Length: 145
Image (cartoon, rainbow, N blue to C red; front, side):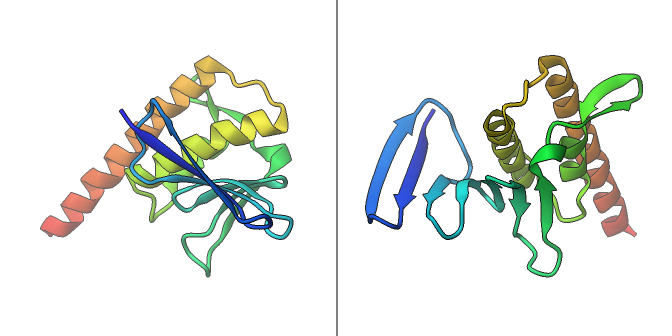
């Protein structure tokens, strides 16, 4: 498995490429700048000092404040991370978008100093798969009509 991490420090013009033991469908880009404060970007999701930002649609930006990232909801008797489920429910979200969000989510949780509940995270991943499966089935049914 292979992952390229490209860290760009625009202010000093240094590029650094490291290889890891993980596979990502898109490169993970970390930007260090005094101007934009993007700390980690995967796909269309970015982690900032203030929270998580999705910039895939310029007319409908999604911003999750740092204080909201770790919110846990109860769904069918299980604890799940609210924003992991919302990311999967977004109309334009694909499997690749959700996986990108999950990378940024875990990074942002650590950045915020929040504890990651393994049980809630595992259940959230399972619920994300359910949501994406239902979206795919509905898409195929609509296409068939």
